[in-house]
Length: 286
Ligand code: PDD
Image 1 (spheres, rainbow, N blue to C red):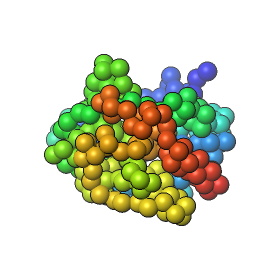
Image 2: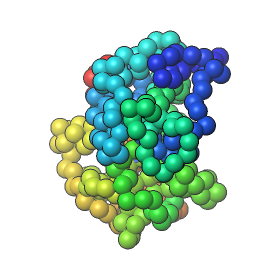
Image 3: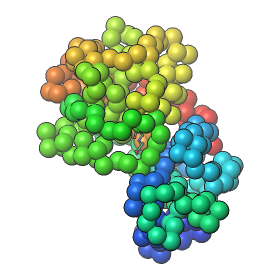
Image 4: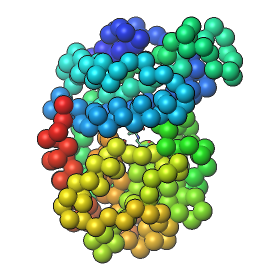
């Protein structure tokens, strides 16, 4: 069945959706994005995603094309028109399509941003991977220095995913100066002696909306949380590990570079965190 997507003010069947070949998102990855999950036809943590979007736009000197209320309306309309029960809404805003390719930013007065949103149906709560856990490998983090901005420059993370697949694993954790930064499309966390250890915020990682919510719920449930960088070696000796992202929620990691954590199955703290996260985030869905 064809999806209805949103392009610059219009809701159109996906086959009719068009953006210019001069669009800077296409030519220069000059664009930011957000992925907001949907359960039971409701959006999870929309306010968090809208706030990060504003931050990403401001960091790249791009004006917000519309208010977050209007964005929420479009998200909801796409859920409605596509009858989306569970999955994600993808949103991308580019610096628009100037008349010609040029490294200089176009004048926003004459080149409006391109705004595209589309839905993607996916079973998120009842995920087979959450039952078995996933295997990760480590790779060098060679991305640029502003990973806190959610841009569409996803070639290296995509290559990282392929390196993981080639090694028979599910995903890759990126490592810089011996310290784990994050997963290809998720934040990385470990658990040692019941304490959650997760890299502190900075320019080196994306400030995950799921990470923030999970840490908040974990603290409320009396978990101890340490926000600091951890090494790959420390991760391999952890009792448990997990990733967080809008679409993975809390996903157990059971091996790192072939080294099994604990007994190599999802651990009790991670399973508890996944339950808490899904319960709490659902209650606040809009
Ligand atoms: N990825 N780190 C990176 C590099 C990411 O790409 C993502 C999200 C995260 C987790 O952020 P959040 O919890 O806000 O989803 C961390 C999205 C889901 C994607 O690219 O599909």
